[in-house]
Length: 148
Image (cartoon, rainbow, N blue to C red):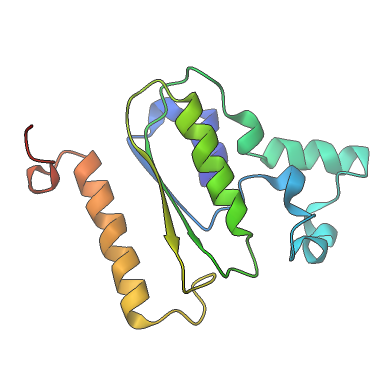
């Protein structure tokens, strides 16, 4: 939902955080957990299923030259539920497309998955990074980079 809101109305967003987001639904059924989601979300092999998946697919709706807001995308390298390539692919696409000059950052937790089984320290570190990113982008002077 964050990805589609971001691609549908980037003008309404100052900063977006997509945590382990399914951003490429038209390709998701080919991931490890994809076949399990076909009964709920549909398949690209069916015309109606394809239309629904395409409408949900944030990656397919990214437009070149659009002034996207600052975006933080997160993933776990060992995520069995949402393939880490989705966040990586979406990050690269937004970085290439945006005209705003605002950062689009991918945060990868290399020793974790979908949050389940993460250590307290991993959860705390991600929370700290997320809040720091939001505060940096919303103007809190304590989080501005030093002047060059």
